Amino acid sequence: MSTKLGFVGLSAGYSWAGKAHLPGLRLIEDSPYKITAIVNSTLEAAEASKKKNKLQDAQTFGSIQDLLSQGDVDTVVVSVKVPHHFEYVHAALEAGKDVVCEWPLGNGIQEAEELSNLAKSKNAKAGVVLQARKAPSIIKAKELVESGAIGEVVSTNFTGYTDKWSQYTDEHFPEYLNQRKNGANLLAIPVGHDLDALAFVLGEFEFLNGIVKTHFKETQVTHTDEHGKKTLTGKQTPKDTPDQVLVQGLLQSGTVASIRIEGLQSSELNKEKGFRWEIRGSKGEIVLTSKSLYSELEEVFIQIAKIDDNGNALPVEDLSVEYDPVAGNMKTYYQDYAEIKSSQYAQPQLNKFAGFTTFDDAVIRHRQLEAILRSSKSGRRETYI
Image (cartoon, rainbow, N blue to C red; front, side, top):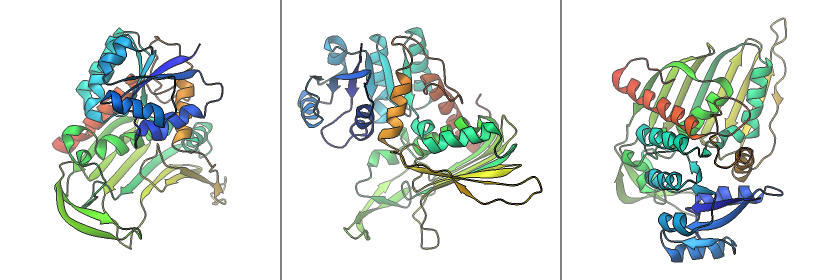
């Protein structure tokens, strides 16, 4: 019997549900899922989505309340702006539905904890999409670390850059992402995803120190022409979200860790965007790189370089494989989500290979982000586990 999905946020135009969730589901052979309902801001918008996405059998609704009272669904997929996550997820859980929600689970730790507690009380299968864990290169890194391929892991260093949340803002960049109150900023989204990937591979922090800084309080809005040249539009937009994040500390394994991520328009001396993640061990090191800061939605490459028993450096091995980082990661997430029965509370994945990231996993990540903010404010070492 198929699991019946009801989508909140699958639109006829651009939407993350349309770019990632729907293509990922369609990659699954003999799929255990069927999309039976679409909710949008209006009934007309839902009808347009149904037609555009060729979901002829789906019911359409103009509100979450109508979906829950009239729709035939087992699981509600919430893929909308962060400020609306709590409302839709809470309503779905109260109605006895399972839920898949985009990260972040809530707009801050209080919303996330309340939703996690509600999911437990309702015995709901509740998943949060932290899909970097499904990327083949990140899974490979975890396999190498756990097999002892680079010996004892001594240190890890993650450095990432993006031109978003910087001194310039493209005219098409959603303005709400520059406002801290909306919970969809540099720290919450890309840093949250990247920290989750690090935790999956290497485990959680024993303690951490954090610096979170908003250097640019307003950004210059730019237009980019067909040749990629930017020009100022003359507009400015206020920004109270961070553009500098530094996290350092000790992992529970004893590994020294440093994460530095910034939003800054690059010069010719540093044109690279994306990230470089080094995992250094007593017998070699693993390096993961990407052209984007988003480890969950851009292809990640992996190399390993070992040291022989006499301390000689051996040639670099490229272990990268081609994969679809958007639909492919979502395909694997939904396949793993299907392994747990409907209306059955799923234990947190933590840093295990098997499973999917649950509301409990999301709460851990929310608590980590809160610990980073507390440390930045107090200057003290913080814990979150």
